[in-house]
Image (cartoon, rainbow, N blue to C red; front, side, top):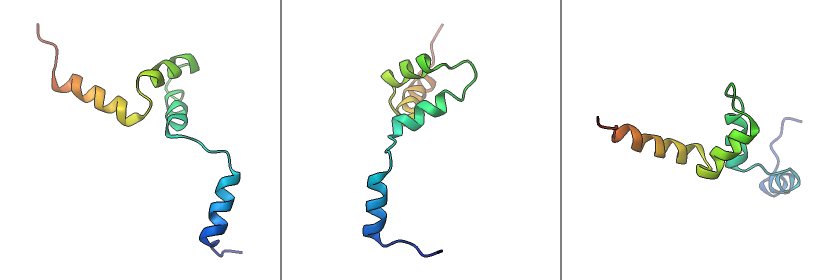
Length: 68
């Protein structure tokens, strides 16, 4: 029809859909990387449940490089 649903209709439709969490989406993204299996993706998610948490941890490594 090309008409946007009302807010209440939108909410009702969303309640019927399977909900994906940010971690679910992140896991799917991780598994797109070559040689990253589901097992590896889940291990990463255990430590870093979101892309932001992984990026923040990585930024700490970049900020404080290992010294010889």
